[in-house]
Image (cartoon, rainbow, N blue to C red; front, side):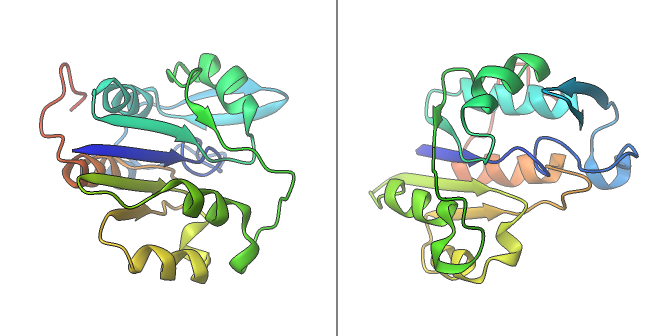
Amino acid sequence: MKTTIYLDVDGVLTAETKRTPAYKISGWEYWETKTVQRWQILFSPDMVAALNELAAHPDITFKWLTTRQDSAAQVLSPAIRIKGEDWDVFRSDQQVWRGLDWWKLRAIQGDAEPSEGHRFVWIDDDISAEVEALKWAAGRDDVLTISPSSVRGLTRGDIERIRQFAGVHELVGASK
């Protein structure tokens, strides 16, 4: 089954906190802090490895859907070792954040064309506050939204939900 995963950065790949997120909640034991374009970011290399394994699956395509736009692929990817340099990047001059005009909602609506056997996963910490986005996703059984807490980012449990939704049961060398 083909799956497209739309990935945000801040609050998803990076935890927006100065404290390391708890293992019991995040599922990730080890965290690193790096400075990327003057921003200090906190991320889990194990999370990055799990995402890289998903991205290596032949039926999964990742796309950047972040306000960081091109810098996610060009700067962040090599800095945290996520293999996203060649992923498509959604761009927008319109940085509207709320409601019907949220540029991310419009971008995914234009890209996630329903088709037999294709699924879509939208990962963004802001989705849970976006009523229009939640309504749009709730009306489709081919869309899974993941809205992690911005202070802990994507969890191991979130990765497992994505794998199940995408029908990916085994990954070579999967991080456990």
